[in-house]
Length: 70
Picture 1 (cartoon, rainbow, N blue to C red):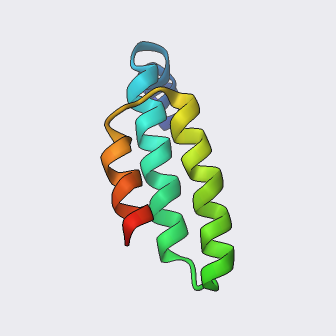
Picture 2: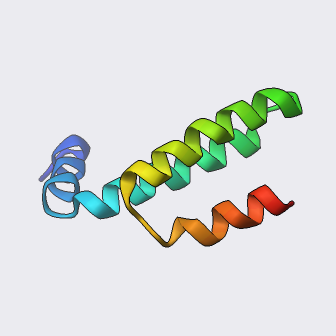
C-alpha cells in the first residue's frame, strides 16, 4: 500500500500544474482564515498576487480582480 507522501509525490510528478493551483488556492484560504489586521492581510495578498502572476495561471485573474475591487 502506498504511503501518503508517495501518493502526494505521484500527483506532484504527473500533475505539477494541479499541485501548484492547489497550493495557491490553499495559501489564499489560509490568508482569509487568519485573524489578522487588514494591512497585514493586504501585504499577504500582494505576495499571493505575485505568486499567481509568476505561476502563469490565467484562471486566478478573475479572482484577483474581484479581491482588488472588493
